Each structure stands twice: as C-alpha cells, then as structure tokens.
Amino acid sequence: MNIDQIKQVFLIGIGGIGMSGLARYFYQLGCTVIGYDKTETDLTLALVSEGITVFYQDNIQLVPERFLNPSVDSLVIFTPAVPKDLKIKNYFIDRGFELYKRSQVLGFISASRFTIGVAGTHGKTTTSTMIAHILKDSGYDCSAFLGGISSNYNTNVLFGDNNVVVVEADEYDRSFLTLHPNIAVVTSADADHLDIYGDESHLIDSFKLFLDRVVEDGKSIVKVGLPFEGNISYSSETRADAYAENIHVDDGEFHFDYIYGDMRVENIRLGIPGLHNVENAVAAITVAILLEIDMEKIVTALANFKGAKRRFEYIVRTPEHVYVDDYAHHPEELRAFLNSMRKLYPTKKLTVVFQPHLFTRTRDFVDGFAEVLGMADELLLMEIYPARELPIDGVNSSWLLNKIGIENKRVVMPQDVLDRVMAEKPELIVTVGAGDIDRLVRPLKTILENE
Image (cartoon, rainbow, N blue to C red):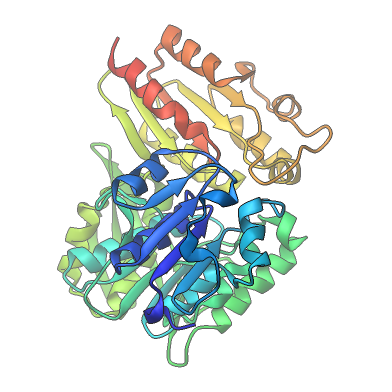
C-alpha cells in the first residue's frame, strides 16, 4: 500500500484510542475521514469537533457513496474488537475492499521512518508518552502514535517535522509484529491476553519476535527480570545497565538519581507520581541518551511531564480530598499503582473502586486480583466489563469478592458508587479499570469538589 495515495479513510471502531489516533493522523494529512462506533463517547465527540464524521448505527445506508467500490485512494481500517457479524464490516468485505488492522497501517506509516517502538503488557502508554514528550520538549521533535491522551498535548497523536516516530507497540493479537523498530523498549511481559495467546509461553515468544524485528544496528532496551534480554537492561529496583537509585518522595513528588554506565544524574524530579513511573522514566531517559539529547533538556522535560489521561491522573487534589483515576486492569498494574498510593499517602484511608475487565482475564488471574485488592481499606467492586466477550458461567464480581480478604467490601452498581461517595466523602479514593468506569470520573469530581 502507498499511504501517500490515500484520500479517504473509513474506520470501523473509530472510538478506540488507537483507531482515533489514526483518524486524526489522516485528517491532518487532508484526507476525508469517516468512522463508525457503537457508542458516543468523549473521544468520538472530540473527533467530531475536529471535523471528522462519526455515526453510531450499524446501517450500511450511512456509508457514503465514495466507498461504493475499492480504489487505490481509499483505505478501510477496522479493530478486531468489532463483532464478526457487523453489517458495516461485511459491507466492505462483500464489495471487495481489503480491510486493514490498525497495526498494519501503523506498520505502513512507520516503515520509512526512524521508529521507536514501546511494548509491554503494562507501562507502555506512559513510557511512550514520556519519550515523545522528551523529544518534543527538548526540540529534538518527533511524530507519535500513543495509546492514551497525552496531558501535555491533549491528544493521542503528535506531528513532527523530522523522520522520527514514537509508536506504542501493542502485543494484543501480535499487532506489534508489523513494526521494524530502530529502538525497541519492552517494559513488562506479565501473562495477559491469554484468550489470544493460550498460555504465557506463547506471549513470551511474541515479545521475542518483536525484539527480533529491531533493525540492524538498532538498540533494544529491556526491563531487568524478563525472560529475554536486549542490548541495554534497565530497572528502578536493582542494578542494571541503566537504573534508578535514591528514590524518594519530597512534598508529594518523586525524585531519583539516574545511573547509566559512568553517568550519574542526581535528584531528577518526575512530574507524575508513582514508583512504576520512575522505572518508566529510566527507560525514557535511556532512549533520549541514545538519541544524544542534552541531559539538561531531558531533566527539564521530565519535570514538566504531565502524564497520560487515566494513568495515575489526579482528578481532585485538595486538603480535604484526593481522587486519582487509573487504567490499571492487570494484577501487577494494580499492585504498582496501589503501592504508589500507599507510599504517597501512608496515613489516609484508601477507598478503591475497581471494575474488572474481561471475563477471561478475571478468571485467569482471580487469585492475583484478590490479593492485590486486599490492599484497599474499602473496596467498591463493580461488575465485570465484558468488552468483546460473552459471559463465562460462574465468573463474576461476587465470585472475586468472596476471595478478597478484607471486611469492608461490596459489589456495586455505578449509582451505588456515587451514593456512597456522596455519603462518605472519602479523603482518598481511586477509580481503576479499563472498561467504562471512566464515566464515573466527572460525577465523582463534582461530588468531591462541591461539598
């Protein structure tokens, strides 16, 4: 495919974070961009406000005439999350269009560019957003396709004037194997997506294949302790080629020293909280050093980095209330997030609102979820968000709740969460999950800010 020939793009599932980034990319290039999604969200509304057409009915009559027949200037992109019997998807198939996954299109876009690919079962969104920000803020520049909304730029796609592109490399259905990175980062490889991979060994094999795709003379930066290695190891807990030391919290902010070979940079201030984000910063700094960016500029960028939406995002931060929203949906992500909350606020009662994501993930990691959610002082457990899945007999939030070893716990509906927060006005509360729990953010913010 010749991306330069594309004049019109249709995206099936345009409201996804990755798909919306491609929509913005092609719209910026001057293409006509149209998309379908099943529900209206803040993200689809933002796309519409930017000039992109979005509709929400699975009705082939709404597909514009310009997409009647395949042509070299037309591109149809779909997400595997849409059902196989979707009428719009089958309309394009029946008319002879070749449908491309987001990952394939990213492969086409990045093929002729210097590509920095960031992979990992967790940590990749913050790390790729951090790398892109360092490159932007330092003046090095880049384009970027991110898996979250950057709080510094309020978008998930960045445009640069050079040939460098930062890509969040998604392991789901082996999507990242379309890339040929010049620099690859792997942040983690915990068992996940077992509905796709079957078992952990196949997931690990996929990450190894990703590292094999690094171009000749390229570099790979891999977290210590994973069952594979890269050219450069990194860590925030143990010694490695690049690592952090003297991690401490000062006035609610994380500081650390960065060590890489003979280089030591002391008391770096990180603009976002979290022990896990210190680790992400070590990887991002190492990428910037490989690009020969001035260390003073790197340090400045890290200090003013605001993170990505729904990644340790402060919603309310007053003397009376702290409310943080996070996307964590795997036990190890939850562990890292809750550990950081405990380190920041050791004396406050922690209320956790959690929405499990996928029946298969809940089933496969139920004991891990039960252990980590036991770190809460109070747990409000929402029903499982199904996403692409059908229910599994016996796998539900009540089953998970019974395994959690704390007394102050209950299964709740969204309105129950609002009612309880209205009544209790908790001093420290978090909402966590990858489903539609983010719909609670605005009403909870309103409750806590308007006592």
